[in-house]
Each structure stands twice: as structure tokens, then as C-alpha cells.
Length: 297
Image (cartoon, rainbow, N blue to C red; front, side, top):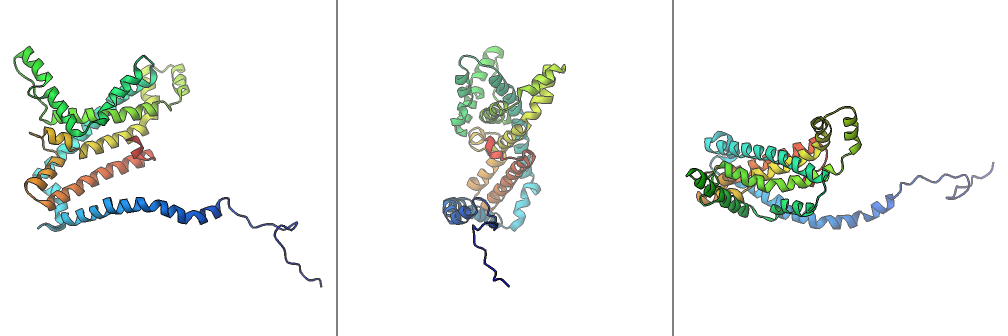
């Protein structure tokens, strides 16, 4: 009986064990990538995880304990403030989407002199903090604003709405439109023009092409940017603080509880509830679009 000769790697007829491409590189580089993740994890723990845990603890430290988180539903004032905030944010989101779709499609489908300058001016409000936006609303619709001066000259009575929900709506709209316009323009550039040509060749009218071809194609981008717009409006404070003479929205309620009444537990619990509502909206939009909602910001 012949002695068996051990197979050596590389010998003819001997199959080498299958090796996945890059497997050794990944295993060898795992330690390096962990070092890359360390700064992000440190910042996450220091500036989000630990403060959030502390905020949750403060929210449950009041006389009502953990039931303070239900005060936004059981307290009539807090509940009305929440409803006002959600209703205002929803209306701002719908108006922003409607305006931005029209303007964004026009800018993407038409080329004219000064187009880049116009787009830059439309997105200029992104550089303004909320307080500046509030001042601009006051200059437009305040007691000495342009609208008040014009209506006083025309009708003998000034129209003033800067210090109401209508003024806050105008400020949020002004602040939200640039974000959504950029998203609509970017999404419209990726549309397949052959789909619209096919619809027109089949006899579809322009409004039918818009409703059945263009808008469905833009729907993921509109959901993402709408979620960002809603979340921004729900948590906006600077504009509300500037105009908050007769405005009752949840960010102002939290501010008053914290600074005016030193009610830290209620302020913390309301903050957590507001954050959960915003997170739920963003998570819903992410699940509907199947992509990162933050990319629309």
C-alpha cells in the first residue's frame, strides 16, 4: 500500500479553500475603524445620551413623579398648547410643500438670466436665525409695519397680525420654504423626462402629467422634506419668542415654565414629550420613504 502524500497548497489538482475578497482586510482593519468611531461615540454620550438621561430624570422628579409626562394630556393649558403647535406646524408644512413644489419645478424646468441669483435669494433665509425672522415679520405686519401703514392709508385702520398665530405662520413659512425648494429642485433634476413624454403622447393633459407622473415621482422627497419642515416648526423657538405677545405654542410654554415659574420637572417632561413627537414624525417619514430623512434638510 502506497503512503499517502499530504496535499500541499498550490499542487495540481488540489482545490484551495475559498476566501472571500477583502475578508482579511476587514478583520485586520476593524481596530482602526473603532478608533475612527471613538470621537463620534464620545460626543454622542457627552452631548446627547447623558443630558437626555438627566432630562428624563428631572422630568420625573416633581411631585407627580412619572405622571408628569402625561400632564400634556391631562392639563388643559398644556394640551391646548400642544394642539396649537401641531396644527400650526401641519398647516405650515402643507403650505410650504405647495409653494415649494410650484417654485422648485419652475426653476428646474426653465432657464433664464439671473436664475442662479434668484435661487440664491430664495435660499438666503437659511442664514437667518429665528429671532431675525421674527423681526422681519414685525417689520412687515407689526404695528409700524409695511402692511399696517398701507392698510391705514387705504382704509384708515392698520392691519396688524404679527403677534398672533398668523404672524408666526408667516415666519415659519418664510423659514421653511428655502429648505424644501432645494430638495424639490434636486429631486426634479433626477426625473425621467421620457415618462412625461409618454404620458403626453397618450393624450394626458399638463395637469394630469403633474398629478399622475411628476408628483408621484417626487413623493419620497416631499415626504422627507415635509417631515423636516414639520419637525422644525414644532420645535422652533426664536421666531415664537420674538412674536410671543399672544401666542401659545409648546416651546414658549416650556420656556415660561422653566424661566418664569422655575418648574423644572414640568419643563423637562414637556420637552421629552415634544421630542418624542418630533422623533415619531421623522421615523414615520423614514419608514415611508425608505431613505434617510435627514438628507432632505
